[in-house]
Amino acid sequence: MYIVHVHIYVKPEFVEEFKTISTENARSSVQESGIARFDLIQQVDDPTRFELIEVYRTEADPAKHKETSHYNKWRELAEPMLAEPRSRTVYENIFPADFGW
Image (cartoon, rainbow, N blue to C red; front, side):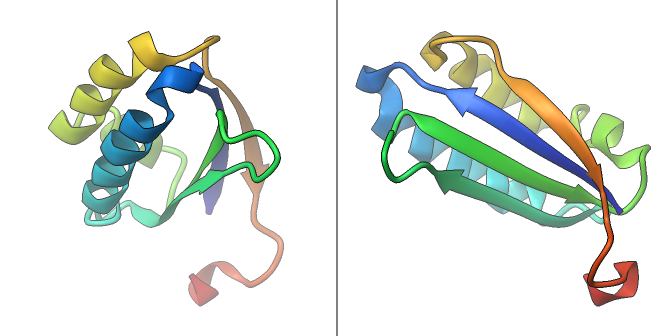
């Protein structure tokens, strides 16, 4: 598994709209064969902070995801809502084993 955490800081006036478009993107993303999980979470003590937890089956799958129309629609709509550029951290799976996804 190839796991990416995307760290997102949204301008306060766009929090609800960001949640809407990001949920739509996540629903479409989990339909991709190369994605095992695609979670959207919001920080409790700072609702302008979000994480996308993207679990891909291979290292090639993030590039395939970025070619989809739903990702490109999300990126185009989301970027003006951001208080700062997105950042990401890449992880490798330890437990459960990959077949457990």
